[in-house]
Length: 88
Image (cartoon, rainbow, N blue to C red; front, side, top):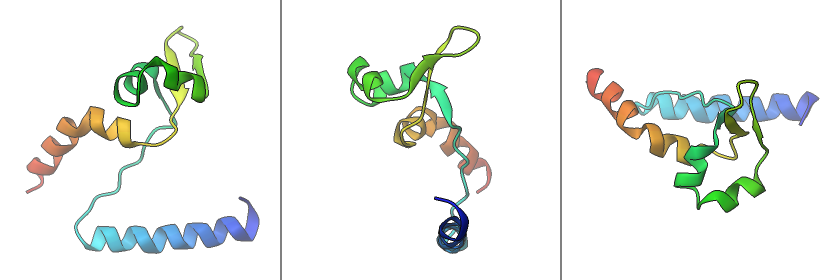
């Protein structure tokens, strides 16, 4: 999506995000790359890697472009919940 379509989408995202923030939610920025092990453990085993853009980074660590954030939130739920408890 580019140009006017991208601007329209960004406006919709900003408006919906503002609604969540007004309701007390906090924004979470999710990285584009993550270790493959998270998706192997949380998203159905090693066969899921064949459905993703998976590769080794410069240090040789297996990583991938994240397909969606559910597995990341599952993996970091304790940390995220601890942060929210601090803010109460």
